Length: 340
Image (cartoon, rainbow, N blue to C red; front, side, top):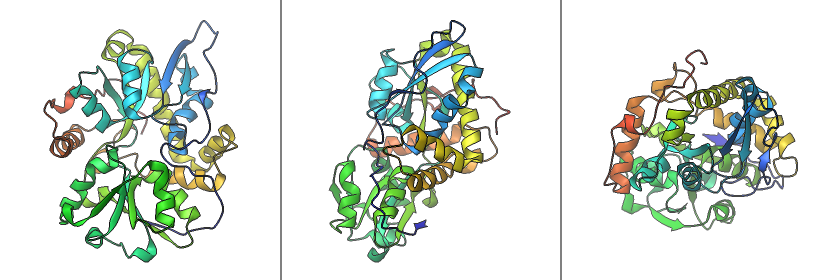
């Protein structure tokens, strides 16, 4: 994947960087007695990669399900899962890898739909570094954030590509340091999240920016989805079904209308999301909505073999000691099969 660079001085839109403070963007808790109030906790602050949730809220898809959904800022997938596990929030946005790790700690949670069913993990580099394929990483210095989802599967990507993990130099950095370090050529590339970090790097660099998609090496790992407490799944099925269907409709709309979705996100975060970045980010996000196995499945549907492959990779590279069968991590019970 390659993006042509531009010299615009655009605000950074990176995972973990502020793109607008949202303590509930859009409708707050509704006073309409006919609607059920629901709290949805994001995994980070709002970005164009979260357009699916905001589309469901702003376009009335949640309200059509008799829900008033308050979308709250987050601080990581882990925190999002913790908020769901202790029942502070009804639903949380989190990575499947974080869910698997959380269940090691017996934090009660289950994924009720998956938004990014193909991993958005990428290695971002400047064209001048000559990184065209995985073997070009040998001897290179790569920025990573220890414990992040993309970094967890980076060894799997290298191994699948026939590259010795020890041959790549890893430099642990904060998310906010990735792009500046790349532009200053202190690192040759970084392992990151395509929808948020790739478009920013492309807009700030003085030369073309390239990206290696981990999924192109056959790495099957699911990513961002929605988690709920098992009690919520059992006791409030209509609420879960409504939330899932609303997001499915949001996914359907954003996938079909990326430019309008981009403008929507800019309108919600006018001070910090730039139109140029938002449009590219939404378009990139849409490429990760389906894996090879789920191309013809409804939005959000989780393939059991995808889940199994993800768990096996996490088990190997995170040294997990308590691993469940794939069905122990998710349910498709609330997916509307008509929303393709």
